Length: 288
Image (cartoon, rainbow, N blue to C red):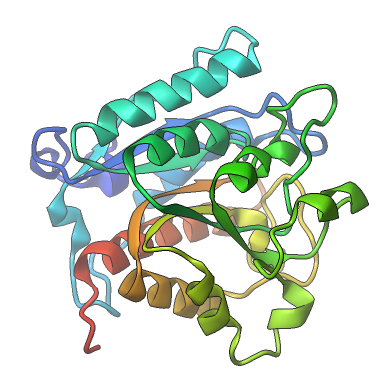
C-alpha cells in the first residue's frame, strides 16, 4: 500500500500524466463560526481512504485504474479570504485546462466559491447541485463575503442552483432562493417524486457541491455544524446515481468534514462517498 497516494493505489495509477481524475485538498477553515476543525478534513479523508476496498460492488468496477492524481494541498492564504478564493480558482482552472476531472476535498464550504468560478468559465450552461443542511445564501457574514455561510450566494446569481436537503437558514436568505429550486428535507423525506423534480431543474453540465452535514448526524457526526433530520446513505446514493446517469457531471467537491479523535466513521464515509461518485462517473452502466 502506498500511503502517498489516494487509497494507497499503485503509483502507476497516480501520476498526473496517466490520471483522468485529480483531487485537490484544501485544508482551510478560517471562517468557521462554530466547531473548528475542517482544516483537518482532507488529511482525515486521505487517511481513511487507505482502508477502502478498491472494488465497487454496485458498478462491478475498479475506478482507480482510470488514474487518480493527488495534487498538492492549497494552503497558502496569508490570512486573506480574497487570496484564498483566487488561489483555488487558479489551481482548479489549471487542472481543468489539462482536461482532468477535477475534484476538491475541504476544508470549509467557502472554498466552493473559487472552484465554481473556474468551472463556470470553462463549461457552458453550468448548473450547481448543492447538497447541504444549510442554504449558505448570505451575501455577507461576519463582514466577509467569503464566509462559509456565503458559499452559494455568488453561484445563485450566475447559475441555476438546485439545493437539496436544506433544513436550516436565516430569514434573509429566503430572498435569494431560486424559486422552485430548493428541496427542503422536511418536504422530500416522504416524497417519492422529488428526485425527478430536482433533476429536471438542472441543465446538462453539473458541478456538485456536497457539505457532509447534508447527512443525518447519526451517520456523519464529525462536521462543523450538524443538523438533525438529515439524509441517509442509500437514499442519497440513489439520487446521485440518477444525476450521473442523466446529466454530465463535470466535477464535484466534498466539504466540512471536521474529524475528531473519538469518531472515525465520518472520515470513512467521506472517502467511500468520494470513490462512489467516481465509480458513478466512469463505471456506471446504464442497464444495471
